[in-house]
Length: 132
Image (tube, rainbow, N blue to C red; front, side, top):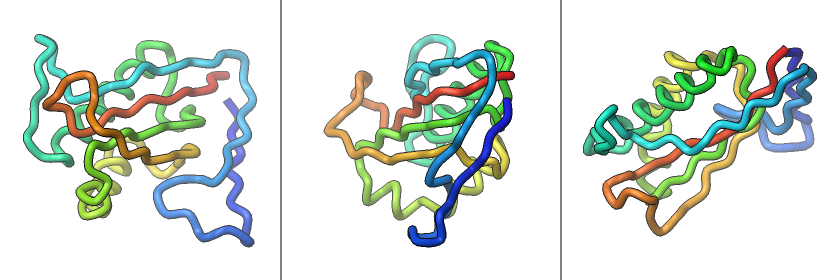
């Protein structure tokens, strides 16, 4: 994939995301929402950072199985049940993201939701990637 990250100077400087990603490639991978489920289908982790790490790991595992890498991510949406808690942990979440996915940030959004499918889930990530 070829990805051009676009961050216009007339917009607020992005932190942990890109304003736009122009991606060219031959395959588009749509990644289902991932929460902090273990292999038995149970939510693990009591804190947002613990669950975020598990959900991101799941998203990247699905992407890798499809032949992609974190740099191929064009778009990720984060669904959080408590946006204030998300904001309070944003530095830690950023460190988790950089450790697992690097610094080639996709276009992103954080959306506050009342609840997720599993009542214990605090966060869910979905997205899509463009592969070469």
